[in-house]
Length: 461
Image (tube, rainbow, N blue to C red; front, top):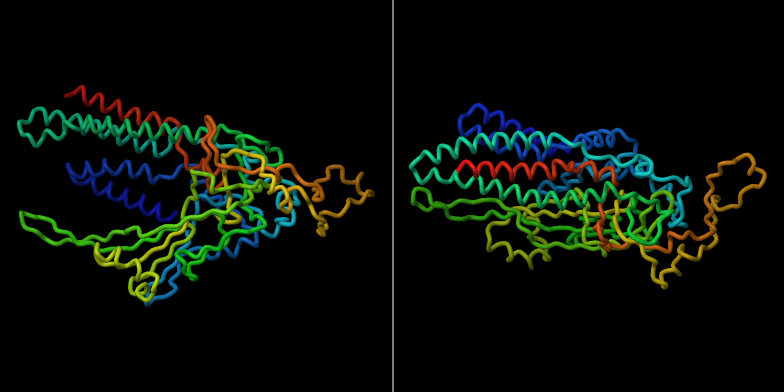
C-alpha cells in the first residue's frame, strides 16, 4: 500500500540523514536497517500488486470497488470513513461475480464447471525467494552491529569508567534476541511449510480427513450477516460471515517528568482499547467444482488480513450518544478524550478464502437441508435435458447435472488440528498468502547467525 511505501521512504531518508552525522548518526542508520527490512515487500508481493491493479473485475463487483478510499461524511463532527484502496489479501485474477453463481444449487459446480482462475491446480504453488531485500538488510544490520560491538567492547574493557560497562551486556542481548527470533522463526517456518507442501484438493474430489482447500466465500441458504459496528446504523458492513470489530478512543494523558530535578507536566496521545466484539456464521467455500460447508467458529487460527473499514469521529459528537455516556467514565479518569475510532476486520461474501482443516460427515439432521441430499426440481435452462441430436456434435460436453445430489454436500470443514498440520483459515488464496512469506533461510539462518554473532562477542570479553 502507499502507506507502507511512505513509511519505507521516511526510514530511508532518516538513514541518509544519519550518514552525515557522526558518530550518533551512524548508530541511528544502523538501527533503521531492521525496520527497513520489515517494511520491504517481497518480490512476489510487488508483482501481485501490479497484476491486481491491472486485472479487470466482474461488473457485479465493480460497484463495491468504487466505494474504496477516504471520505469525509460530516466536517463539523469530524466523521470520516476509510476503506483500504489496496488489499494484499484480495483477488489477483478476476473472480466469478455473484451473477455467475447458481444459488439454486449452491453445492454443485458452477455452470462453467471449471476451477476458479486463482486455484493452485491451475497456477501452481510459488515458493519464496531464498534471499530477498529483507535478508539483505538484515545481513547488513548484523555486519554493522558486529563492527560496532567489537569497537564498543574494546573501548569498554580499556576504560576505567563504570558507565562504559553497559557495552559489555551487548553479547548477552544479541544472543537473547537471536534465540527468541529463532524460536519464532521455527514456528512460522513450520506453519508455512505446511501451506507450501500440502497439496490443494478440489472440492469435487474431496474426502473425509485433513485437507487444504482454496475457494470463494459464498452464502448458505441462511445468508450472511449485516454487521452494525457498535450498534450504530451508520457503521454498517453487509455480507459478513466472520468478523471482529474494535472500538478505541484517543486519550491525551498527562504525566509528570523530572528534568534537572524539577517536576514538569508532559502529555501524550494514546489510543486506548474500549471494547470489541466478534462473531461467525457458517459459509460455503466454492472453488468452481463444488462447495464445502465451513464452520469458522471451530477455527482458533483466523487471519482476515487488512481491516475492511474504519470510522473516526470527534469526541463532541459522541457526547450526544446516550450509549456512549455509560462508558465515558472508563476513559475520563485517564485523561482528555479527543477522538473515537471503530475498526472492523471481516471475511465477506465473495472474498477469497484459504482453509487448512478437517472434513467430517455432516450431522444427520443437516442432511435434510435444501440442496444436500434432496434436490428439488430446477427451472433453470441449465437443468433441462440435453438434446440427443447434438450429442455427436459436442463430444467434450461441459454440462453439469443439477438434478442429482453431489457427495461434497454431505461434508463439512472444521478447525481440527492433526499431526503436522495445524488448522487455520485465512482470507486470500494460497497465492496471496504465500506472497508475504519469507524463505527458510531468512526465518532460520538469520536468527541462528544473530545468536552466533552474540557468541563471538562473548569471546571478546
